[in-house]
Length: 257
Image 1 (spheres, rainbow, N blue to C red):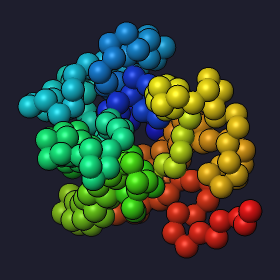
Image 2: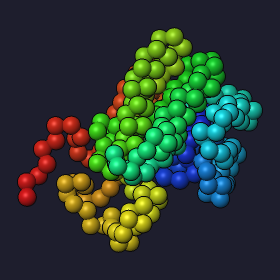
Image 3: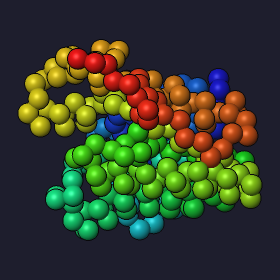
Protein backbone atom coordinates (compact mmCIF):
# COMPACT_ATOMS: atom_id res chain seq x y z
CA UNK A 1 0.00 0.00 0.00
CA UNK A 2 1.44 3.32 -1.13
CA UNK A 3 0.37 5.41 1.88
CA UNK A 4 0.64 2.81 4.64
CA UNK A 5 0.70 4.40 8.07
CA UNK A 6 0.53 8.00 6.87
CA UNK A 7 -1.82 10.44 8.59
CA UNK A 8 -3.52 12.85 6.20
CA UNK A 9 -5.94 15.75 6.61
CA UNK A 10 -8.27 16.28 3.64
CA UNK A 11 -10.40 19.41 3.88
CA UNK A 12 -13.78 19.37 2.18
CA UNK A 13 -13.81 15.58 2.19
CA UNK A 14 -17.46 14.93 3.00
CA UNK A 15 -18.37 15.09 -0.72
CA UNK A 16 -16.94 15.20 -4.23
CA UNK A 17 -13.23 15.23 -4.98
CA UNK A 18 -12.26 15.47 -1.32
CA UNK A 19 -14.35 12.44 -0.42
CA UNK A 20 -12.83 10.47 -3.29
CA UNK A 21 -9.32 11.41 -2.13
CA UNK A 22 -10.07 10.39 1.46
CA UNK A 23 -11.48 7.02 0.38
CA UNK A 24 -8.59 6.31 -1.97
CA UNK A 25 -5.94 7.34 0.57
CA UNK A 26 -7.51 5.10 3.20
CA UNK A 27 -7.53 2.23 0.70
CA UNK A 28 -3.81 2.86 0.25
CA UNK A 29 -3.24 2.46 4.00
CA UNK A 30 -3.54 6.02 5.36
CA UNK A 31 -5.35 7.28 8.44
CA UNK A 32 -7.66 10.16 7.54
CA UNK A 33 -8.95 13.32 9.14
CA UNK A 34 -12.22 13.89 7.27
CA UNK A 35 -13.44 17.47 7.24
CA UNK A 36 -16.36 19.42 5.83
CA UNK A 37 -19.55 21.32 6.53
CA UNK A 38 -22.13 18.56 6.03
CA UNK A 39 -22.25 16.51 9.22
CA UNK A 40 -24.53 13.77 7.90
CA UNK A 41 -22.35 13.20 4.83
CA UNK A 42 -19.23 13.39 6.97
CA UNK A 43 -20.54 10.69 9.29
CA UNK A 44 -21.21 8.46 6.29
CA UNK A 45 -17.62 8.83 5.09
CA UNK A 46 -16.21 8.29 8.59
CA UNK A 47 -18.35 5.21 9.12
CA UNK A 48 -17.18 3.78 5.80
CA UNK A 49 -13.54 4.26 6.86
CA UNK A 50 -14.06 2.98 10.40
CA UNK A 51 -11.11 3.29 12.77
CA UNK A 52 -9.00 4.82 9.98
CA UNK A 53 -10.93 8.09 10.21
CA UNK A 54 -11.51 11.02 12.52
CA UNK A 55 -14.23 13.53 11.61
CA UNK A 56 -14.25 17.30 12.11
CA UNK A 57 -17.19 19.47 11.00
CA UNK A 58 -16.43 23.19 10.82
CA UNK A 59 -16.06 26.06 8.38
CA UNK A 60 -12.36 25.96 7.48
CA UNK A 61 -12.22 29.76 7.49
CA UNK A 62 -13.23 29.97 11.18
CA UNK A 63 -10.60 31.40 13.50
CA UNK A 64 -8.59 28.49 14.92
CA UNK A 65 -10.10 25.83 12.64
CA UNK A 66 -6.74 24.85 11.06
CA UNK A 67 -5.13 24.38 14.47
CA UNK A 68 -8.08 22.24 15.60
CA UNK A 69 -7.68 19.98 12.58
CA UNK A 70 -3.98 19.51 13.27
CA UNK A 71 -4.66 18.79 16.95
CA UNK A 72 -7.29 16.21 16.03
CA UNK A 73 -4.81 14.43 13.77
CA UNK A 74 -2.06 14.30 16.38
CA UNK A 75 -4.37 13.46 19.30
CA UNK A 76 -6.07 10.64 17.42
CA UNK A 77 -3.22 9.22 15.35
CA UNK A 78 -0.06 10.58 16.97
CA UNK A 79 1.37 12.49 14.02
CA UNK A 80 0.61 14.27 10.75
CA UNK A 81 2.22 13.44 7.41
CA UNK A 82 0.23 15.37 4.83
CA UNK A 83 -2.42 17.99 4.21
CA UNK A 84 -4.77 18.14 1.23
CA UNK A 85 -6.31 21.59 0.82
CA UNK A 86 -9.46 20.74 -1.09
CA UNK A 87 -12.26 22.72 0.61
CA UNK A 88 -13.47 25.58 -1.57
CA UNK A 89 -16.44 27.73 -2.45
CA UNK A 90 -17.37 27.32 -6.11
CA UNK A 91 -19.73 30.11 -7.04
CA UNK A 92 -20.63 32.09 -10.13
CA UNK A 93 -19.85 35.80 -10.39
CA UNK A 94 -18.60 38.38 -12.86
CA UNK A 95 -17.38 41.99 -12.65
CA UNK A 96 -20.95 43.23 -12.23
CA UNK A 97 -22.07 40.73 -9.56
CA UNK A 98 -18.83 40.60 -7.55
CA UNK A 99 -18.51 43.11 -4.75
CA UNK A 100 -15.52 43.36 -2.36
CA UNK A 101 -17.28 41.46 0.44
CA UNK A 102 -18.10 38.55 -1.88
CA UNK A 103 -14.55 38.45 -3.21
CA UNK A 104 -13.10 38.51 0.29
CA UNK A 105 -15.28 35.55 1.32
CA UNK A 106 -14.10 33.38 -1.57
CA UNK A 107 -10.47 34.31 -1.05
CA UNK A 108 -10.86 33.67 2.69
CA UNK A 109 -12.01 30.09 2.10
CA UNK A 110 -10.19 29.22 -1.13
CA UNK A 111 -6.81 30.85 -0.49
CA UNK A 112 -6.28 32.14 3.04
CA UNK A 113 -7.65 29.03 4.79
CA UNK A 114 -5.25 26.72 2.88
CA UNK A 115 -2.39 29.05 3.82
CA UNK A 116 -3.48 28.99 7.47
CA UNK A 117 -3.70 25.19 7.52
CA UNK A 118 -0.23 24.82 6.01
CA UNK A 119 1.12 27.20 8.63
CA UNK A 120 -0.63 25.37 11.48
CA UNK A 121 0.52 21.97 10.20
CA UNK A 122 4.11 22.97 9.40
CA UNK A 123 5.72 21.91 12.69
CA UNK A 124 4.23 18.40 12.38
CA UNK A 125 4.93 18.15 8.66
CA UNK A 126 8.53 19.21 9.27
CA UNK A 127 9.03 16.39 11.78
CA UNK A 128 7.99 13.81 9.19
CA UNK A 129 9.31 15.48 6.01
CA UNK A 130 5.67 15.58 4.98
CA UNK A 131 3.79 17.07 2.08
CA UNK A 132 1.01 19.43 1.08
CA UNK A 133 -1.27 18.92 -1.90
CA UNK A 134 -3.41 21.87 -2.94
CA UNK A 135 -6.45 21.20 -5.09
CA UNK A 136 -6.76 24.10 -7.50
CA UNK A 137 -8.59 24.48 -10.79
CA UNK A 138 -7.75 25.00 -14.43
CA UNK A 139 -9.70 28.24 -13.98
CA UNK A 140 -6.62 29.58 -12.17
CA UNK A 141 -5.13 30.58 -15.53
CA UNK A 142 -7.99 32.85 -16.56
CA UNK A 143 -11.37 31.37 -15.76
CA UNK A 144 -14.76 31.48 -17.37
CA UNK A 145 -16.50 34.86 -17.70
CA UNK A 146 -18.89 33.99 -14.89
CA UNK A 147 -16.28 32.56 -12.51
CA UNK A 148 -14.35 35.73 -11.78
CA UNK A 149 -13.97 35.61 -7.99
CA UNK A 150 -13.46 31.85 -7.93
CA UNK A 151 -10.80 32.04 -10.64
CA UNK A 152 -8.98 34.85 -8.83
CA UNK A 153 -8.86 32.78 -5.63
CA UNK A 154 -7.48 29.74 -7.46
CA UNK A 155 -4.89 31.84 -9.26
CA UNK A 156 -3.61 33.06 -5.90
CA UNK A 157 -3.56 29.48 -4.58
CA UNK A 158 -1.39 28.42 -7.52
CA UNK A 159 1.11 31.20 -6.85
CA UNK A 160 1.26 30.18 -3.20
CA UNK A 161 1.95 26.57 -4.19
CA UNK A 162 4.90 27.52 -6.34
CA UNK A 163 6.28 29.90 -3.72
CA UNK A 164 5.96 27.54 -0.74
CA UNK A 165 6.94 24.55 -2.83
CA UNK A 166 10.37 26.12 -3.10
CA UNK A 167 10.81 27.75 0.30
CA UNK A 168 9.31 25.02 2.49
CA UNK A 169 11.21 22.25 0.75
CA UNK A 170 14.50 24.08 1.14
CA UNK A 171 13.89 25.10 4.75
CA UNK A 172 11.68 22.31 6.15
CA UNK A 173 11.92 19.39 3.71
CA UNK A 174 8.15 19.71 3.21
CA UNK A 175 6.92 19.29 -0.36
CA UNK A 176 4.09 21.49 -1.67
CA UNK A 177 2.42 20.64 -4.98
CA UNK A 178 -0.91 21.25 -6.68
CA UNK A 179 -3.27 19.55 -9.08
CA UNK A 180 -5.68 21.62 -11.16
CA UNK A 181 -8.76 19.54 -12.03
CA UNK A 182 -10.80 20.41 -15.05
CA UNK A 183 -14.53 19.77 -15.24
CA UNK A 184 -15.37 17.02 -12.74
CA UNK A 185 -18.76 15.38 -12.23
CA UNK A 186 -19.26 15.75 -8.48
CA UNK A 187 -22.53 15.67 -6.58
CA UNK A 188 -22.45 19.43 -6.14
CA UNK A 189 -21.62 20.09 -9.79
CA UNK A 190 -24.58 18.00 -10.91
CA UNK A 191 -26.81 19.95 -8.51
CA UNK A 192 -25.45 23.36 -9.57
CA UNK A 193 -26.16 22.73 -13.23
CA UNK A 194 -29.64 21.48 -12.45
CA UNK A 195 -30.30 24.63 -10.41
CA UNK A 196 -29.16 26.66 -13.42
CA UNK A 197 -32.00 25.14 -15.42
CA UNK A 198 -30.23 22.28 -17.15
CA UNK A 199 -31.99 18.90 -17.45
CA UNK A 200 -31.44 16.07 -14.97
CA UNK A 201 -29.13 14.20 -17.34
CA UNK A 202 -27.23 17.25 -18.68
CA UNK A 203 -23.88 15.50 -18.27
CA UNK A 204 -24.87 12.80 -20.77
CA UNK A 205 -25.07 15.24 -23.68
CA UNK A 206 -21.88 17.30 -23.69
CA UNK A 207 -20.22 19.28 -26.45
CA UNK A 208 -16.99 17.67 -27.71
CA UNK A 209 -15.45 21.11 -27.33
CA UNK A 210 -15.69 20.81 -23.53
CA UNK A 211 -15.55 17.03 -23.23
CA UNK A 212 -13.70 15.29 -26.08
CA UNK A 213 -14.14 11.97 -24.25
CA UNK A 214 -17.91 12.41 -24.25
CA UNK A 215 -17.98 12.55 -20.47
CA UNK A 216 -16.61 14.59 -17.58
CA UNK A 217 -13.79 13.59 -15.27
CA UNK A 218 -14.72 11.48 -12.25
CA UNK A 219 -13.66 12.30 -8.68
CA UNK A 220 -11.95 8.92 -8.43
CA UNK A 221 -9.66 9.88 -11.31
CA UNK A 222 -8.51 12.98 -9.45
CA UNK A 223 -8.02 10.89 -6.31
CA UNK A 224 -5.83 8.41 -8.19
CA UNK A 225 -3.52 11.25 -9.18
CA UNK A 226 -3.49 12.66 -5.65
CA UNK A 227 -2.01 9.46 -4.25
CA UNK A 228 1.21 9.94 -6.21
CA UNK A 229 1.79 13.43 -4.82
CA UNK A 230 1.12 12.28 -1.25
CA UNK A 231 3.25 9.14 -1.46
CA UNK A 232 7.00 8.68 -1.14
CA UNK A 233 7.03 7.85 -4.86
CA UNK A 234 6.93 11.61 -5.44
CA UNK A 235 10.50 11.83 -4.17
CA UNK A 236 11.86 15.38 -3.96
CA UNK A 237 9.38 16.91 -6.43
CA UNK A 238 8.00 20.17 -5.07
CA UNK A 239 6.51 23.44 -6.27
CA UNK A 240 4.77 21.80 -9.23
CA UNK A 241 1.28 22.37 -10.64
CA UNK A 242 -0.26 19.69 -12.85
CA UNK A 243 -3.44 20.17 -14.87
CA UNK A 244 -5.84 17.23 -14.93
CA UNK A 245 -8.09 17.93 -17.88
CA UNK A 246 -8.97 16.14 -21.11
CA UNK A 247 -7.71 18.97 -23.32
CA UNK A 248 -4.95 21.60 -23.01
CA UNK A 249 -5.99 24.85 -21.39
CA UNK A 250 -3.28 26.96 -23.02
CA UNK A 251 -2.62 27.00 -26.74
CA UNK A 252 -5.60 24.83 -27.51
CA UNK A 253 -6.77 24.16 -31.08
CA UNK A 254 -10.51 23.60 -30.72
CA UNK A 255 -12.23 21.51 -33.39
CA UNK A 256 -13.78 23.36 -36.28
CA UNK A 257 -17.53 23.27 -36.76
